[in-house]
Length: 110
Image (cartoon, rainbow, N blue to C red; front, side, top):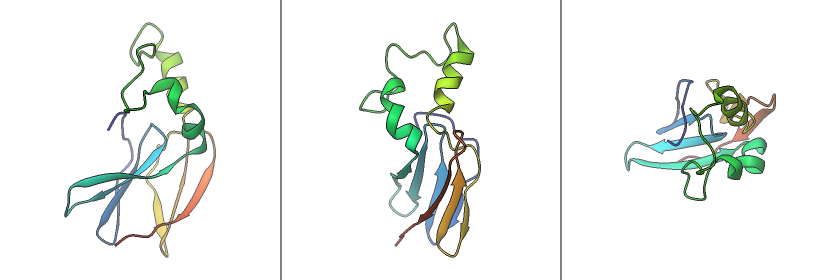
C-alpha cells in the first residue's frame, strides 16, 4: 500500500476488504493474492494527484515526514481517508471518510 491502513479488514464471502488513508477501498482475493481498488472517495478522486504520481508513488514535491508534518497530514486527510473499519450488512458495505462523507456500496464478489 502506498499509505497507512488503520482499521481492521472485513471478510465478504471469500474476499478481504479494507480502507486506506489514501481514500481507497481495496479488495484482496486470498486465492490469487491479487489486490484491486474497489472504490475511491470523492476527496481522493479530486486531489489524489496533489500527493501521488500516476504510478501511486509520492510526488517529489510532497514530503510526508518533512519540515511540516501537520500540513502533510492535513493534505492526506483531505483525500477522504478511510480511517474506520467498514461494516457489511446484507451485501452492502458502509463506511465513512475523513471528509465527513458516508458511503453505502453494493459490492459484487465472486
